[in-house]
Length: 296
Image (cartoon, rainbow, N blue to C red; front, top):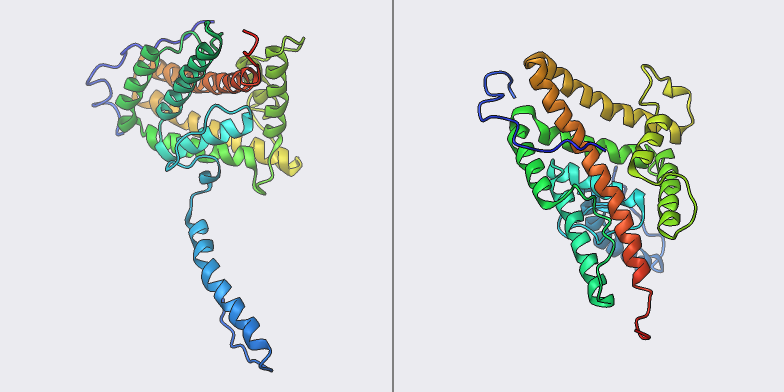
């Protein structure tokens, strides 16, 4: 498959001249026996209330990505992988931290395999996604970000991605079902079982179809909530992307706008490929950690 290489395609002055960038109630004690109970309740409230307020002030992505703790080791659950990715995008406004995290996880897991078995492991890191490729992608992102507002764009994508996965009720949408089916295919493929296509391209195709991103109009209000939320928020991400692309078309020559749109589309695909490779790396580490080398 052809990969868009992140060469330095944007000259220093490329965009400079073309775009800008409760109510309190009084308690009456009716007996001395009630006083110790009320005192206990009041103390409990005094202890717990600050913690409740602290939780209320925390951003929603903390549950899956806590910047203070950093990224979790390679995971085997696609839903959690994409929720962590969403939190990272919302916090950093850039795909760089997640891409570098997964690259580091591949290196860590492969080193563990060599140490345990004394031979080279199978690498699940996309072959084209080497350090030079990531460095070039990041350099172009950092150049374009202040001119196109990519930080705000990525943060909005991360926030909406989380909503698309968890839904308005926080209980999960059909995207969770899609992820579960796909990670089962990935596991079966890695275990040598016969299965249908378990590539990221297959996951992407299923998401596009199930979320109706290939349709010109969608009446999502007629769907049950888990489907409606997924489709609605996914269309929100698509709408934000198309709005950004429209700005490029209006402010740049067609060839220049085309190059940037190709680059941004490629970034989305690269992040998805790395998420797919994370679940593979997580399954790999889980699998070989259970193998005994005592007989070797």
